[in-house]
Length: 204
Image (cartoon, rainbow, N blue to C red; front, side, top):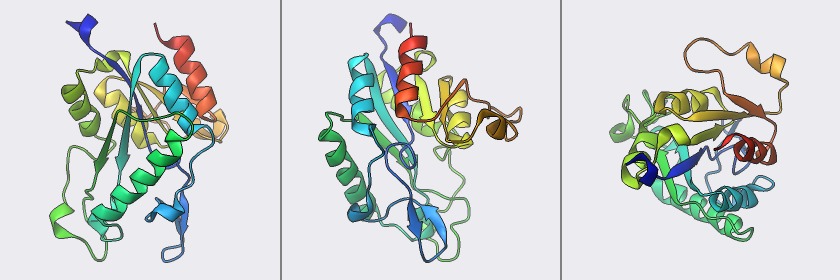
């Protein structure tokens, strides 16, 4: 049966497919909350097109705790996702599925209580990847998880995928954050072009 299963590249969204934006209210870099804030990362559409041409499904897996924190509405999230999809389509890229986690364990100062919980889908837990695998008949051991955070790497390892950490930091700077809890990526690259090269080289 495994021969019939599909393989996938799971991709974090913020910081990988689109740029983070500055949140003036909280003084931090955060996810875009409105379509006009969406700036696609260089080559993101081309990357998604290329991995699909290699025979992978492209599945976006993103934590969106702003819904639980009441700083982002589900409608605004949908509009942001559609704007990113529109920009990607201009480069010939289109994801096969997008999974998002709206939860947060405490919800901050003004939470939406229905989304405040310790869930199985919020990375570093692998719930979004496992759900997609069940729905789309994905062989996780033939799949990849790409992200710019160690929670992405942990989620990928927990699901049984190979992992790529995308970061501008030097390897020595990154390694001091690694521990024994699944945070060490299989590969490290600086951008999506580097991630694509790894996938081409290391996939059977």
